[in-house]
Amino acid sequence: MTLLSTPSALPSPQVPTPYPLSESTELGAAAASPEAAAAPGAPERIEQLRELIAENDRASVQLLNRRLELVAEIWREKDTRGVPHTDPERERLLLQQLEEANGGPLSQAGLEFFHGVLLSLTKQELGR
Image 1 (cartoon, rainbow, N blue to C red):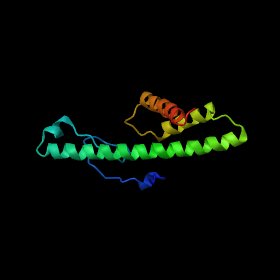
Image 2 (image 1 turned 90 degrees about the vertical axis):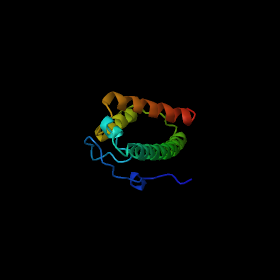
Image 3 (image 1 turned 180 degrees about the horizontal axis):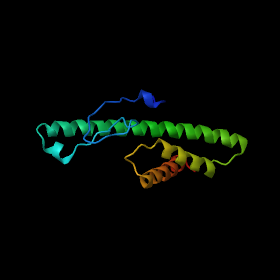
Image 4 (image 1 turned 180 degrees about the vertical axis):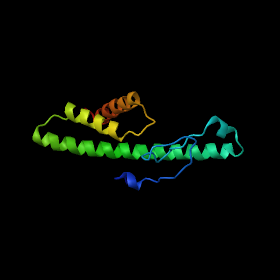
């Protein structure tokens, strides 16, 4: 299986939305309003949006798998140097970088939760 190495390898369909999106939002970016769901052609639109969400979810899994591979490589390097795997300062820096990259609609609380889950899942999957 070939994993994505850069976000540019991801498809980026442009989907019109009933609300403004940040420029950084690409996959699965659209959400239909209740009025749009009741409009003619709504079932097709809902299916189109669901497929975009599924596409986004598949890309997220590929990116998570790539992240796990990279962290495993870092940990092997750290093992050869006798350096601990976890680095609280690096984890704080990652959260700061994610905050700077977050153009919404993800809230600060949601981002902090995601960060915690990401770190916990990484440690769990890599057996530490």
